[in-house]
Length: 225
Image 1: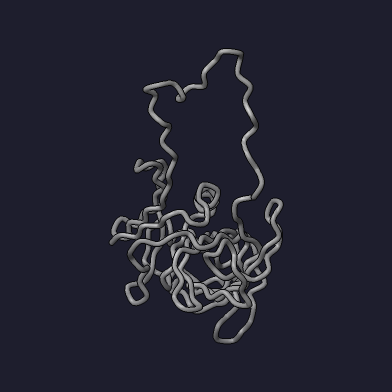
Image 2: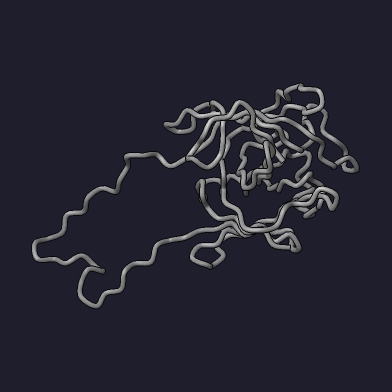
């Protein structure tokens, strides 16, 4: 879980604070997350997450004002799909499917699975929520702050407690559940598909970066048992 502080609206879906730049955007976030601090990474027997606050350094949303370049056709040519009897091209729709029983997260395009990856999920005492949700925010290099001590974890990037990507999909009051990266010391929890988190979903760094690039704010997220 993550709790965003000092927030403002982004894409009218969630509240976010000021971020560092991603591409041509300059947005940011401060958050409280439920994962352990990387300042002293736990041993294999100490993988339960604890409450943390995270400050995200970047978020993404579609860049306004961009359109595809115009295509010039030869004189007398009719564009494909515009003639009588031609069927309209179906739009591409994507959704994230998280199957808790299989400990697998997939990206589906027009109902067809195009990629699947292993995940670590919530501990039975702090389970990952099930249901239908949407991507509420995307954050690059989120940073932790302990909810107990208020101390901010200085580690950013792939070996930070949340890795270098965050995809939030459910808000519960000031808290959030999300899909995020995993520092190398905890990567075994993902490869072994463990149930060890406070409800968030851990992915390996390479996997979450790929998913991050393929979804947008508003992409549906379906979580099943």
